Image (cartoon, rainbow, N blue to C red):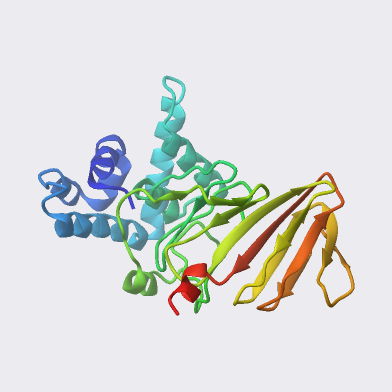
Length: 271
Protein backbone atom coordinates (compact mmCIF):
# COMPACT_ATOMS: atom_id res chain seq x y z
CA UNK A 1 0.00 0.00 0.00
CA UNK A 2 0.98 3.64 -0.39
CA UNK A 3 3.16 5.38 2.19
CA UNK A 4 1.85 8.16 4.42
CA UNK A 5 2.96 11.03 2.20
CA UNK A 6 1.11 9.63 -0.80
CA UNK A 7 -1.96 8.99 1.37
CA UNK A 8 -1.88 12.64 2.43
CA UNK A 9 -1.69 13.65 -1.21
CA UNK A 10 -4.71 11.49 -2.03
CA UNK A 11 -6.72 13.08 0.78
CA UNK A 12 -5.74 16.57 -0.43
CA UNK A 13 -6.58 15.93 -4.09
CA UNK A 14 -9.45 13.42 -4.02
CA UNK A 15 -12.28 15.11 -2.06
CA UNK A 16 -14.65 12.26 -2.92
CA UNK A 17 -12.68 9.85 -0.72
CA UNK A 18 -12.64 12.38 2.13
CA UNK A 19 -16.43 12.69 1.83
CA UNK A 20 -16.79 8.91 1.91
CA UNK A 21 -14.59 8.19 4.95
CA UNK A 22 -15.38 11.42 6.80
CA UNK A 23 -13.29 14.54 7.23
CA UNK A 24 -12.36 13.77 10.83
CA UNK A 25 -10.99 10.34 9.91
CA UNK A 26 -9.08 11.73 6.95
CA UNK A 27 -7.46 14.45 9.07
CA UNK A 28 -5.96 11.84 11.43
CA UNK A 29 -3.01 11.26 9.12
CA UNK A 30 -1.81 14.86 8.94
CA UNK A 31 -0.28 15.28 12.44
CA UNK A 32 1.37 11.83 12.29
CA UNK A 33 5.11 11.47 11.74
CA UNK A 34 5.60 8.67 9.20
CA UNK A 35 8.93 7.57 10.62
CA UNK A 36 8.23 7.89 14.32
CA UNK A 37 4.86 6.16 14.70
CA UNK A 38 4.66 3.44 12.05
CA UNK A 39 1.92 1.47 13.83
CA UNK A 40 -0.31 4.52 13.97
CA UNK A 41 0.29 5.17 10.26
CA UNK A 42 -0.61 1.56 9.46
CA UNK A 43 -3.82 1.82 11.50
CA UNK A 44 -4.89 4.97 9.64
CA UNK A 45 -4.26 3.42 6.21
CA UNK A 46 -6.13 0.27 7.28
CA UNK A 47 -9.07 2.31 8.53
CA UNK A 48 -9.48 4.32 5.32
CA UNK A 49 -9.00 1.25 3.10
CA UNK A 50 -11.56 -0.69 5.14
CA UNK A 51 -14.13 2.10 5.07
CA UNK A 52 -13.93 2.25 1.28
CA UNK A 53 -14.48 -1.49 0.82
CA UNK A 54 -17.23 -1.67 3.44
CA UNK A 55 -19.23 1.25 2.07
CA UNK A 56 -22.68 0.50 0.70
CA UNK A 57 -23.29 0.05 -3.01
CA UNK A 58 -25.33 3.27 -3.12
CA UNK A 59 -22.53 5.26 -1.45
CA UNK A 60 -19.93 3.88 -3.85
CA UNK A 61 -22.11 4.61 -6.90
CA UNK A 62 -22.63 8.21 -5.83
CA UNK A 63 -18.97 8.86 -4.97
CA UNK A 64 -17.63 7.29 -8.17
CA UNK A 65 -20.15 9.25 -10.25
CA UNK A 66 -18.91 12.50 -8.71
CA UNK A 67 -15.28 11.46 -9.11
CA UNK A 68 -15.78 10.57 -12.77
CA UNK A 69 -17.56 13.85 -13.49
CA UNK A 70 -14.82 15.90 -11.81
CA UNK A 71 -11.90 14.11 -13.52
CA UNK A 72 -13.51 14.31 -16.97
CA UNK A 73 -13.98 18.03 -16.40
CA UNK A 74 -10.44 18.58 -15.14
CA UNK A 75 -8.75 16.67 -17.97
CA UNK A 76 -9.94 19.46 -20.29
CA UNK A 77 -7.81 21.89 -18.26
CA UNK A 78 -4.79 19.83 -17.20
CA UNK A 79 -2.96 16.56 -17.68
CA UNK A 80 -4.36 14.00 -15.29
CA UNK A 81 -1.94 12.01 -13.16
CA UNK A 82 -1.19 8.40 -14.02
CA UNK A 83 -3.32 7.18 -11.14
CA UNK A 84 -6.24 9.45 -12.06
CA UNK A 85 -6.18 8.08 -15.62
CA UNK A 86 -5.95 4.57 -14.21
CA UNK A 87 -9.01 5.15 -12.04
CA UNK A 88 -11.02 6.37 -15.04
CA UNK A 89 -10.01 3.27 -16.99
CA UNK A 90 -10.94 1.00 -14.10
CA UNK A 91 -14.31 2.73 -13.75
CA UNK A 92 -14.98 1.98 -17.41
CA UNK A 93 -14.22 -1.71 -16.84
CA UNK A 94 -15.81 -2.09 -13.40
CA UNK A 95 -18.42 0.65 -12.93
CA UNK A 96 -19.64 1.30 -9.38
CA UNK A 97 -16.96 -1.00 -7.89
CA UNK A 98 -15.31 -0.04 -4.59
CA UNK A 99 -12.00 -1.25 -6.02
CA UNK A 100 -11.95 1.84 -8.26
CA UNK A 101 -11.60 4.06 -5.17
CA UNK A 102 -9.33 1.60 -3.33
CA UNK A 103 -6.87 1.90 -6.22
CA UNK A 104 -5.89 5.32 -4.86
CA UNK A 105 -4.43 3.59 -1.78
CA UNK A 106 -2.43 0.99 -3.72
CA UNK A 107 0.85 1.41 -5.55
CA UNK A 108 0.57 1.75 -9.33
CA UNK A 109 3.42 -0.29 -10.79
CA UNK A 110 4.42 -0.32 -14.46
CA UNK A 111 6.76 -3.13 -15.49
CA UNK A 112 9.01 -2.98 -18.55
CA UNK A 113 9.86 -6.03 -20.61
CA UNK A 114 12.18 -8.27 -18.62
CA UNK A 115 11.14 -6.91 -15.21
CA UNK A 116 9.34 -8.87 -12.50
CA UNK A 117 7.41 -8.16 -9.34
CA UNK A 118 7.25 -10.33 -6.23
CA UNK A 119 4.01 -10.16 -4.23
CA UNK A 120 3.94 -11.76 -0.80
CA UNK A 121 1.13 -13.85 0.64
CA UNK A 122 -2.08 -11.97 1.51
CA UNK A 123 -0.99 -8.72 -0.16
CA UNK A 124 -3.72 -6.93 -2.14
CA UNK A 125 -2.97 -6.62 -5.84
CA UNK A 126 -4.65 -6.40 -9.23
CA UNK A 127 -3.32 -7.10 -12.70
CA UNK A 128 -4.49 -4.30 -14.99
CA UNK A 129 -3.32 -4.92 -18.54
CA UNK A 130 -0.52 -6.25 -20.73
CA UNK A 131 0.97 -9.73 -20.87
CA UNK A 132 2.87 -11.41 -18.06
CA UNK A 133 3.82 -14.79 -16.68
CA UNK A 134 2.55 -15.44 -13.16
CA UNK A 135 4.08 -18.10 -10.95
CA UNK A 136 2.24 -18.86 -7.75
CA UNK A 137 3.05 -21.03 -4.74
CA UNK A 138 0.44 -23.50 -3.51
CA UNK A 139 -2.43 -21.63 -1.85
CA UNK A 140 -5.89 -22.38 -0.54
CA UNK A 141 -7.77 -19.97 -2.78
CA UNK A 142 -8.26 -16.39 -3.93
CA UNK A 143 -10.13 -13.84 -1.80
CA UNK A 144 -11.49 -10.95 -3.87
CA UNK A 145 -11.73 -7.35 -2.71
CA UNK A 146 -12.93 -5.54 -5.80
CA UNK A 147 -12.58 -4.96 -9.55
CA UNK A 148 -14.56 -8.11 -10.18
CA UNK A 149 -18.07 -9.31 -10.96
CA UNK A 150 -17.47 -12.37 -8.77
CA UNK A 151 -18.22 -12.80 -5.07
CA UNK A 152 -16.32 -10.54 -2.67
CA UNK A 153 -15.65 -11.83 0.84
CA UNK A 154 -14.60 -8.62 2.59
CA UNK A 155 -14.63 -9.95 6.16
CA UNK A 156 -12.36 -12.89 5.29
CA UNK A 157 -10.16 -10.51 3.36
CA UNK A 158 -9.67 -8.22 6.35
CA UNK A 159 -8.85 -11.17 8.63
CA UNK A 160 -5.93 -12.24 6.44
CA UNK A 161 -4.78 -9.11 4.60
CA UNK A 162 -1.18 -7.94 4.87
CA UNK A 163 -1.32 -4.15 4.47
CA UNK A 164 2.42 -3.63 4.00
CA UNK A 165 3.38 -0.08 3.08
CA UNK A 166 6.05 1.02 0.64
CA UNK A 167 6.76 0.61 -3.06
CA UNK A 168 7.44 -3.02 -4.08
CA UNK A 169 10.86 -4.14 -5.27
CA UNK A 170 11.23 -4.58 -9.03
CA UNK A 171 13.28 -7.67 -9.92
CA UNK A 172 15.57 -7.29 -12.92
CA UNK A 173 16.76 -10.90 -12.83
CA UNK A 174 20.28 -12.26 -13.06
CA UNK A 175 21.89 -13.52 -16.26
CA UNK A 176 22.81 -17.22 -16.19
CA UNK A 177 24.01 -17.38 -19.80
CA UNK A 178 23.46 -15.43 -23.06
CA UNK A 179 19.93 -16.83 -23.38
CA UNK A 180 18.66 -17.12 -19.80
CA UNK A 181 17.60 -14.68 -17.07
CA UNK A 182 16.69 -16.01 -13.62
CA UNK A 183 14.27 -14.37 -11.20
CA UNK A 184 14.70 -15.32 -7.54
CA UNK A 185 11.90 -14.30 -5.13
CA UNK A 186 12.75 -14.02 -1.41
CA UNK A 187 11.13 -17.35 -0.51
CA UNK A 188 11.88 -21.01 -1.17
CA UNK A 189 8.86 -22.21 -3.14
CA UNK A 190 10.03 -21.40 -6.65
CA UNK A 191 12.33 -19.58 -9.08
CA UNK A 192 11.58 -18.60 -12.67
CA UNK A 193 13.92 -18.67 -15.67
CA UNK A 194 13.15 -16.71 -18.85
CA UNK A 195 14.89 -18.21 -21.90
CA UNK A 196 15.04 -16.70 -25.37
CA UNK A 197 16.95 -19.01 -27.72
CA UNK A 198 17.78 -17.66 -31.20
CA UNK A 199 17.47 -19.72 -34.37
CA UNK A 200 19.90 -22.66 -34.70
CA UNK A 201 21.16 -22.14 -31.14
CA UNK A 202 20.71 -24.62 -28.31
CA UNK A 203 20.68 -24.47 -24.54
CA UNK A 204 21.62 -27.21 -22.08
CA UNK A 205 19.49 -27.43 -18.94
CA UNK A 206 21.60 -29.13 -16.27
CA UNK A 207 20.32 -31.74 -13.85
CA UNK A 208 18.73 -30.14 -10.78
CA UNK A 209 17.47 -31.64 -7.54
CA UNK A 210 13.82 -30.66 -8.05
CA UNK A 211 11.19 -30.97 -10.81
CA UNK A 212 10.50 -28.19 -13.33
CA UNK A 213 7.62 -26.93 -15.43
CA UNK A 214 8.28 -25.46 -18.90
CA UNK A 215 5.93 -23.11 -20.73
CA UNK A 216 6.66 -22.34 -24.39
CA UNK A 217 5.48 -18.84 -25.32
CA UNK A 218 6.50 -18.55 -28.97
CA UNK A 219 8.50 -20.34 -31.63
CA UNK A 220 9.33 -24.03 -31.93
CA UNK A 221 12.27 -26.33 -31.47
CA UNK A 222 13.38 -29.72 -30.21
CA UNK A 223 14.05 -31.20 -26.80
CA UNK A 224 16.51 -34.04 -26.46
CA UNK A 225 17.80 -36.09 -23.54
CA UNK A 226 20.46 -38.79 -23.66
CA UNK A 227 18.07 -41.67 -23.05
CA UNK A 228 14.95 -40.61 -24.97
CA UNK A 229 13.79 -39.80 -28.48
CA UNK A 230 14.02 -36.17 -29.63
CA UNK A 231 10.75 -34.35 -29.02
CA UNK A 232 9.25 -31.40 -30.88
CA UNK A 233 8.29 -28.43 -28.66
CA UNK A 234 6.26 -25.43 -29.80
CA UNK A 235 4.21 -22.42 -28.75
CA UNK A 236 1.51 -23.11 -26.19
CA UNK A 237 2.92 -26.38 -24.86
CA UNK A 238 3.65 -27.13 -21.22
CA UNK A 239 6.12 -29.80 -20.15
CA UNK A 240 6.87 -31.42 -16.80
CA UNK A 241 10.52 -32.40 -16.32
CA UNK A 242 11.43 -34.63 -13.36
CA UNK A 243 14.36 -33.99 -11.02
CA UNK A 244 17.90 -35.04 -11.93
CA UNK A 245 17.32 -34.92 -15.68
CA UNK A 246 19.69 -33.07 -18.02
CA UNK A 247 18.41 -32.18 -21.48
CA UNK A 248 18.95 -29.80 -24.39
CA UNK A 249 16.49 -27.51 -26.15
CA UNK A 250 17.35 -26.26 -29.66
CA UNK A 251 15.51 -23.51 -31.53
CA UNK A 252 14.21 -24.14 -35.03
CA UNK A 253 12.46 -20.77 -35.38
CA UNK A 254 13.68 -17.19 -35.42
CA UNK A 255 13.27 -17.14 -31.67
CA UNK A 256 12.17 -19.78 -29.16
CA UNK A 257 10.79 -18.08 -26.04
CA UNK A 258 10.10 -20.19 -22.97
CA UNK A 259 9.83 -20.04 -19.19
CA UNK A 260 10.95 -22.58 -16.62
CA UNK A 261 9.56 -22.70 -13.07
CA UNK A 262 11.32 -24.86 -10.51
CA UNK A 263 12.05 -25.15 -6.81
CA UNK A 264 14.11 -22.18 -5.60
CA UNK A 265 17.83 -23.00 -5.61
CA UNK A 266 18.14 -21.60 -2.08
CA UNK A 267 15.99 -24.48 -0.80
CA UNK A 268 18.59 -27.08 -1.78
CA UNK A 269 21.51 -24.97 -0.56
CA UNK A 270 20.09 -25.18 2.96
CA UNK A 271 20.81 -28.92 3.11
